[in-house]
Amino acid sequence: MRTEIEGRDLVSLKGVHKAFGSFEVLRGVELGVAKGEVAAIIGPSGSGKSTILRTINGLTPVDHGVIQLGDITVTDPKVDKVALRHRVGMVFQQYNLFPHKTVLENVAMAPIQVLKEPRKDVEERARNLLAGMRLTEKALAYPGELSGGQQQRVAIARALCMQPEVILFDEVTAALDPEMVKEVLSAVRKVAEDGMTCILVTHEMRFAREAANRVFFTDKGVIVEQGEPKAFFANPQDPRTKEFLDKVL
Amino acid sequence: MSETSIFADVLRWLPFVLWGFGLNVLMSVLAIVLGTGAGVFLGLGQTSHIRLVGGVSRLATQLFRNAPWLVLLFYCIFLMPYSIVISGATYNVPSWLRATLGFSLPVAANFSEIVRGAIGSIPKGQWEAAEALGYSRSVTLFRIILPQCITRMLPPWMNLYALLITATPLASIVGVEEALARTQAAVQSEAQASFLIPMYATLLVMFFLYTYPISRISNALERRFRTV
Image (cartoon, rainbow over all chains, first blue to last red; front, side, top):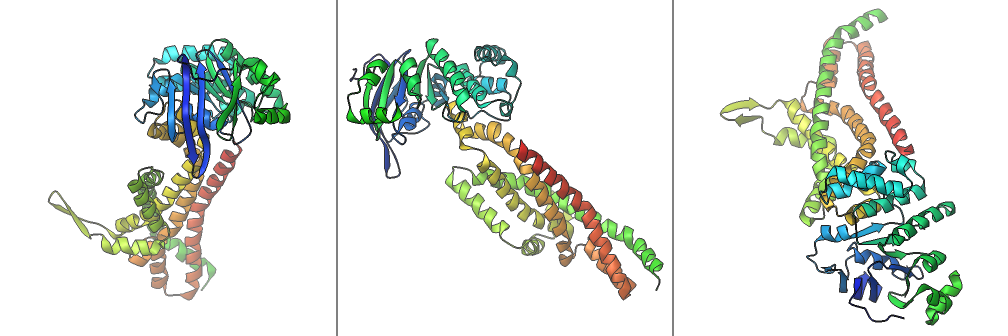
């Protein structure tokens, strides 16, 4: 079990605190993810999993602590937001596609409009990504015409099109009908297998065990335990982890 | 007095009243244009994170939205100058134009609320997704949020216009010669009691024929956008 934050980490959180009003969601989170790693964050509802994810790309500002992403200090108030969002992609539980834009526009618009990349290059990249998600023929459809699983795969393509170094997956299958969970999980797994650093908050324990290199267990705003998935699930150390796994497995 | 002659009298006065109605339409069109323009600014101002802008916009919106239209009309009629001087030349500001400005105040305030409501009805996830893609707040507003608002704003905007056109006869109270004032003039000059009801009925029909299709289109649009 790795306890110290190592220098090779691409993403590191040190002593991260965050309170919403008087409620302390994060109470000193320590977390490190190396380049190319797939990290799964699991834990009971309200334990701060999603908040951890949202602090990494600065969607939720923190109260104390330092978050480092490569050479970017996310917690620096003067951080270059565009550079940060260029390097960290995010996929949401509710997909959050833009309903007035076609699938292709959804995927290509941010690199064109925010990163100012040439339209032709971006659209070619977007079409390739959609093909990778088996959505080639949906490029000109609107999100409302797609199933939940298809929309979520578009959202993954949209995150990939920014060519980030890390992608954050926030309970990406939680809003899906059961028959669509598998297609989205295999899309996530494909992204992970292509070498992308992935941090995912998930309730899919089997997926965490099979696809992740490292599992973090959160409870009441701290990381209680972490480890390689096999050892973590077979032999949890902390009583809180044991109790949680007993409930969900 | 035979019925045919009453009908003939109404018909005789009809062009006179219709010209007045033209003024109602003109005032309403100008007021909706001015009010919508100002309402967009007020509505965006209400959603601003800059405290001063938000506060002033909210105050103006609530002030003009919760005041009787007639009171605002009186304010504009009596507070506005009767003539203005532009580069040496003096222009009279006709009372119908001052009344139009009086109408555009409540229109602006009501449209401000329509804008604020439409922006507020867009799920928060849209803002977050845009933020996660590197969009700034203002670019998100104009490229992602507002385009989705337009279809939501159209039906209430048309309802607002229907309310506005039916409110324009208030201008007769401050001396604007619009349809109602001209109907009154016609009734008075005919000086016969049996003429009164048909003449006002004609005025009602005039407003109804103009306003009803607008309400219908607005309802139809509302139904259509709801199912999407």
